[in-house]
Length: 478
Image 1: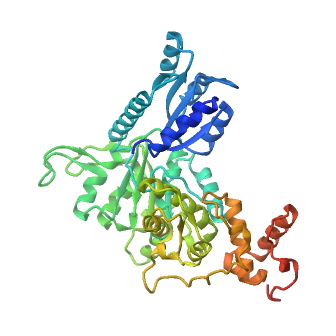
Image 2 (image 1 turned 120 degrees about the vertical axis):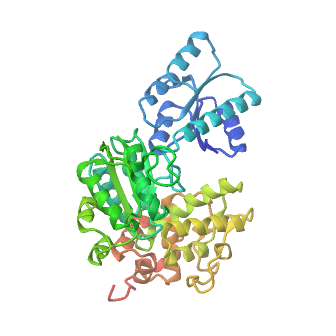
Image 3 (image 1 turned 90 degrees about the vertical axis):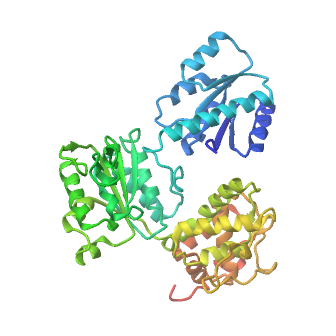
């Protein structure tokens, strides 16, 4: 559905809870706040499609928030609510950009009409922006993870995004290269301009030149009308050349001219067209090797590789898996109409043990399949993962009640990242009989990191901490 996430900003507890319930029944993802400060904190952490805002709040007026959000390039639709309606208030809200104005108490039917209007408006807006903001499976989702590799990637994006530099993103299939490209676009000065994506691998070789540069009427059989190419559509904005290594040498030469001169000619045309475009390219190959094999032009490689970004495979930052799993569980439970389940210790351990040759895309597919197979059972287990025979990782032994820490009992389906981290560390230590060196290897972290975490747990008095973790029982080599 066009609208996914909604904030309810209302200081009256009864009204707020009632509105939350009605929205969740319609399968919206709802966050609530009772003050302007709480709402601003939510907006700083995530993006939302719609806000239901009370006009009068304990720490200010809802209209002030309405005015602040108008300067954002991407902002939620604002539905203002008030129990003290007046013509002046309604006019002020609509003048400042409110989508609708509801007088409390409003009926279920009134809410339904407002939501339907908002859905239709958002859908029409997305359709009208289709060419400049092509939707993809990854669109609208952020880079998730707290590992050093993911944090370094975010820092690099923050440095590169404000510039006009051409960027080459390399990495294995399924690592999230397009997510990186979209993050570069959203954080750039061109964020309000077009973002045009071209999948070079999906376009037939005889059509890719026309897709890139456009064509004039009669340029070839079937060219009944003039057509602007993707570079022209991206003028003033950003173009993403996905899987750039798949284009032919002839198109490589013409692409080089665009990068050097920022000008092009349509197929069948003679007029030179100037374009102002930032280029981001992705590939799942090592282009240096393609250059050595004479499959890719060296001069074009140098033009593209102004700022190289390498996206690491999932096996190099497995500590992000719990956070990714939690996110995908919520996302696909909502998509398929299920309550978000919990996840068993053995299931999470199996996911951590898997090598993930398909990277984050494979993890996403596995979690969606598990959600569907689990249904309303309440907890994901290994049988729901559906790994193919021969590809299934070595499963951890089924934990016995005597060795599993109590922190895993009554598993919270919405654990914090810190809680999930603590659970995994204690589970690994129990599995390894308190041997920190072996536990660190299972968790794919350094022994120093593990020791620091254990010291933190001792200081705060974490229950069920294995008694022997403080003993020097590690391997001498560790």
